[in-house]
Image (cartoon, rainbow, N blue to C red; front, side):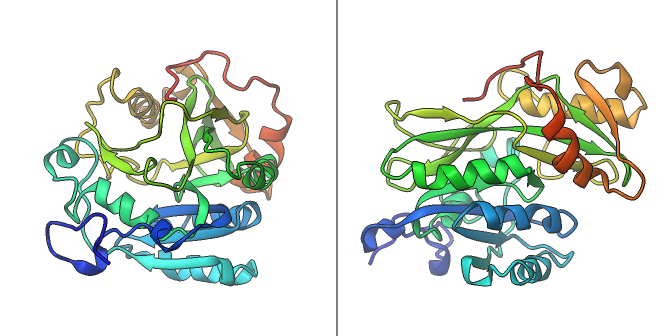
Length: 304
């Protein structure tokens, strides 16, 4: 069978062949992770996801911190090894921004090709883009578990709010409730729902007629460690507020916290965990479920 998307470099194992050519896809939802050096986050990220969805695909892109080994171990500890696909994408991928813009979309070095190849590993009717630093709350697990069977044959696209959390230490973090971080993450699998090149990054296409579902706030947090480079996958940090408002907000928050000005940023809230409890566990299991809604009271731009 000829591939649907052959890559420029002639790496045949990394051409894209879509799974629906083999017949109807299995009902259910597959979560697709594209990760590099997420070993620190995966023990929080993977266990709730294994509860929430039918299958998990993790594509490692050159990690040197033991990410694949941690992922496999967590899958086995969760009793989910039979619902877990671990694979690798061995090519350097252009960073978002100018590098991405300069890279042809069918190159193995393109974000667009990387995403299409990663999602071609899915064998269920629905797929979900997820990052290796995003942790579901218990409410998030329950919501996705219910959603996976309700989506069958709906062709709906689902947007999931997320709440960036800048981790200062094992007991202190800052949660950003001053901007609404919302984008589509869950899509049907099919020829109308593939990735194309956009100005700053890849974008998943979907028909204008698709129903759009917006999930409630408080379902997941996005971990950002202040002792790590959280912008290394970008080729610049001069974010245009019209094209990348979410990234501009993240850069402003990071800069303020680095300079000790976190208490001056509207909507940024300091959270401290009780003794003996890690701040990630405190936020996802106790603080967020109890926090009054709406969580975000001053809305930034909607990305749906």
